Length: 164
Image (cartoon, rainbow, N blue to C red; front, side):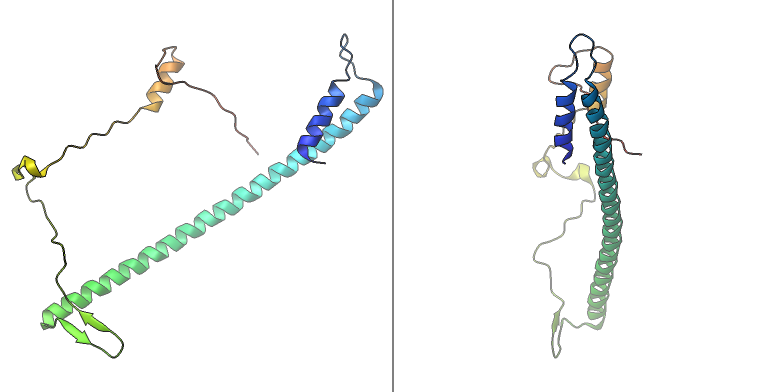
């Protein structure tokens, strides 16, 4: 039986309680005990599945970090080799090599790299204003908690599942 089905049956049994005393009929009380145990076992199974998936996700996160470090190292090695080869070609005064499988060329970039040496000396025509507004959610939460009303914002306490 699924967890939501057990929950519906628990509700149905609890609805059998006497309106005045709140007592359950003897057979309903026994059924309630059985369903409560089944519900608890199902809930625990769900919690175990959650922990297993969290552990697997963490293992994947660690593996991704390892692979990203490996990728970054390979990219760094590749860039070092490219810089080394270009420097050696420049040093030797060679601008191209035609190999058996590959052609290597040292050529000028299509776009110039711009280096700013003094920002104050750059004319305003070459500047643009960038404005960024960020909302301070922590300050809003503190203000609402202190009883202040903040237009356009609300604070709500949600629920989360804690498994130990």
